[in-house]
Structure formats: C-alpha cells, structure tokens
Image (cartoon, rainbow, N blue to C red):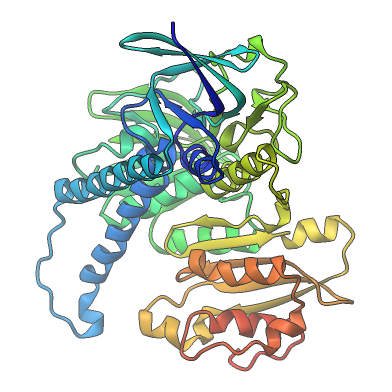
Length: 467
C-alpha cells in the first residue's frame, strides 16, 4: 500500500466536498478528493437538486404551452416527449459533473476513485477496483452526504416503489402517483408530475405540508395544490403498503380516522434523509455522533483532531447544498489559518421549487413569538404586483416578520413566482442588518416581481401602496 502525504483529504464530491477541495487548492494546500461514484457531484448534482430543477423547468414550459391560448398564442395539440425531457435532464447533469472535474483539475486537486474509510491518526484507506491505497493527511473533511430514508419493511425498486433516485430514471410519465411525505422533495415531485398529467396524491403524517415553513406558507401551498387538483392528505398515515401487478396499493388513514384503499401506478417515498456515517470508519476516531449525525464546533471540527465534517452528515444544520458549501469554506479557512465567520442559522435561505415557489429565511412568525419577540408583520399579495399579472402567476404573497420596537427583520417568507430568486434580497438585507425602514427607502424597479418585497416591508407599518 502506498502512502501519500496531503494537507487535506476530502471524502465526498458533493457541493460541499468539491467546493472545499477547490478552496483548499486556491489556498495552496496539497489536496485530494476521494469519491466512490464514477461521476462527481454527489446527490445534489447527480440525483437531487439539479435534475429535479431541470424537470421543474420543463414542467413550467409545458404548462405555458398547455395554456398558450390565454396569451393569444395558438399551439394546437402540443405533445410531451418525456424521453427527450429525461435526456435533457441527463445532459445537464453530465455537463456539470464534467465541469466539477475540470474545476478540481484547475485547482490542482488529486481526484482519487474508491471507497474511503477513516483509519485514525490522519489516515484514510481507499478501496478501489485496482486495490487498496493508504492516504495520509494533516486534515480530513467528511462530506459523505445523505441518502433517502425508507419506510420500515419497504425496499426501493426501479418500477413501483421509488426514492428521489428511481423517480428520476422513469422513462414515461406515470398515470398516477402517491407521494408519502410533503417536505421539499415530495411537493416538488408533486408539482412536476401533476403538470405533466399525472394524478397525484400527497400523504403527510404531520398537520401541514412543508412543515418547516411558516404556517401561512404551508396553508397557501396546500390551497394552491388543491386548486391544481393535487390531492393532499395531512395528519394522515399510509399503511399496509403492497405491490400489485400494476403498481402499489395502501391503506390511507385520514386525520378524522377514516380509512380508504388507495392504488397508484407508482409510489414515491419522500420521508427525509439519513446521514451517510455508517461504514466510513468513525469507530477508529474520536468523532462523536448524535442520532447518526456528526457533532462539530463552529469551525466544523469534530472531536477527532484534524477531522472536520460538513453538509448532510452534520448534526443540527439543514440538509441543503448551499449550507454544505458554506461549511466547507469555514472548515478550509480554519485549517489554513484564514478568517472564518461561523454560520448564522437565522441567515440560511430555504427554497422549494414548486408552482407556486417558496423562498424563506429567518424566523417564522410562530418561532419569533415563541422566542419572546414583540412581533409586527407585513404582508403583500402578488395579486397587487403588475409583473406577476403579466407573467400569469399572481398567487401567493410576501410575508415579513419583524421586531416591533427597532424594526429588526427577523424573517421573510415568500410563496409565489420566482420566490426562490426573490429571497436573495431578504438574505442580503438581514446579513447587512438592515432595518425595515432601510428596506422601505430602498428603490425597487418597476415593473418587477421584487417590487413585492418593497411593498411587504412598507406593509409592516400599513404603508403599502398597491394592496
């Protein structure tokens, strides 16, 4: 076995892992990145964020064709070529995976294929088809990501019981789909396939959809889904799940205790994700776990000297690609002796790419009140925004949660057109510690969607113009 000394070994090539490796290369650290899969990019790029958003973009375009006559465009008998939709999605993934490889090469990062196992003392064993290789480094970053949780007694397959991986490989639009779980993954696939013509049912055990969002956002998305004829059952349980000759069937127990047999061509299980911390050699280190997640300090350091962890494996932070990337920047800066500002969890944006879309940052109204703030709320509907009307997407609203006395912005919650883009203004404002008054005085171009942001800030004091 060959020993190669490095300043840093990164295990995992997701957004957090490859970004950390590139930054380390930029800082002049001799760096290696170990990845067990043939393609680089991790879950986000290969079977998560990027392919899903490709399908959502196509669903948006398809919907415009279906309703083109409303804009005076005659488009008779449009046809969805789903194999070509899938090919486009796969092409985007392949392009950006190759792009990651190019970026690593440019940063002089050694790419090592194989399965990495921590051996303690800065050593990492890599098992590849060609045999074993022992690497050694001053620092190690664990960026092994997560995988879909599965319901007890079920196993995913390519035909009937799907996770985010299998559903992305479908070659035809299913006639019917049951989705268990109404978090971001579940509602995004509901939004995709309903617009492609699938009969969709969403089952959520908790009292509302997208439960991490502000309650008003959850209510608005559920209202919109029902308007789109997506069946939504919250406070409900899916039991006795079985495969049939043509799909799946299960027993639905609704919130009022009624039971119903549901059948569908496909079942998507979207009940969360578990960290990939098994079988990576943590038992050979002092790394501490919390329910399978790795404990870290504000610099992303674990209890094992020289070992850091970032991304979905970390305890107490959202499983989001941009969080992993930022954590990687902090870890590498710390080991390189550069300034590193810890993550402020109240400044992490969350985006859900449904129709209507969702973007949020900071405290929900309920959390702000629970933390003892004297809360003042501003709200502006997209129905009053001329650009939203031009686009034909005027559902939803912007909600601003503030502290009453000093005008501190505690949280911003958006549901509506391009919400996932609009939230950027709120993140920047909160990071700069701008007050409501500052944002009221900020000129917003007309006609734009982000005018709704300015109106919502004015609405905190009852001064919005167009509502």
